[in-house]
Image (cartoon, rainbow over all chains, first blue to last red; front, side):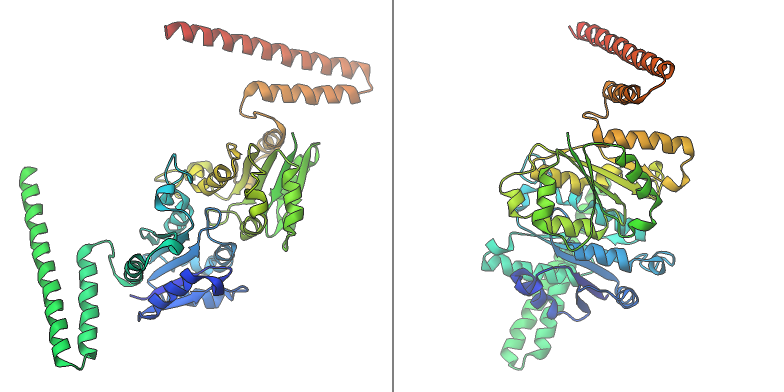
Length: 227
Length: 227
């Protein structure tokens, strides 16, 4: 899988959030980091799109939508060369958006009144229209207020959002950690450290197998109940 | 009431729809027609906003949103001078949007899958955030395919959308016609024509009074049923 991250931010150099996400993405193979700068060469942008199976729009939320530059890019790049051949059909569209309000503000009765799902509906409609699979969005609330532990978790989750096939499934996230550990094991020269990491990797795999078995059993019990 | 029509169209000179709507708006006093052209002077744009009680965003729908220039305008003009003083609180926000698909395409299961209300939610959220009253949107479907009768109706309905206080109420629309007729009567020099127009104006008023009476009676009967 190849992921294209389309970053739309009018003041990119001043954004600590984007710098943080860029560092997380830099660790990943198969991730192309693409910062939008007008003017665009539509043909070149279309080649980039064609190279990716997962396309992620990444932006700070301004007035319940992406900054104007993303819309300009959409209006200019998604022309008939993309739409008439259904080039993007079957590919995935993800959204990473940073928000100045807390998660709880985005609900009826709270300050923002509308849910993230409602606010992002036009992007869902875009995905539908292009025959793309719309991924569950990845909202980042109040990055400036996050402590170190929250940021570490965000760092990992964001990497998973870019690279894990079915990132909402727990077993896929475990698989992701096991792969990372195996990379570390191969790089490690100290045999004792290597052994420790191998133990950890095996433990994770065994736990996941046990979890999978339990899920299978529960599924079987539920199927019986439905008889 | 003063209405500000903010027209966002990247190829305005080629748009027959916008030319049609411009002609309709030109007949109206108290309507300011404002075509967006970058770069913007935020202070000047803010003065325009302050002068209007009804603000209308008018644009062709591109990829389930306005063309980029409207977003650029929002991002640059709605700064803290607007938000911190709640300058727009209590004013109205309307949307006039032209669509390449038919009305029936905008529903679950049809080609566009999402309703106009869903697609325009970010503008509704914007109005909520600014303390503005969001008006029922005014979508114009497939203008190019409309025949002369449909266009005449559109011409009048659009004028009403810009100028009638509560344009969904039938009695307000009648009132609008009566005012127009009275203007015509004052301009008319032929006494016979004048008498005819006066008759028509009286007839409309009488019919509306009768309608209002009937509505009042129905309301009274319903209230009794609820006892």
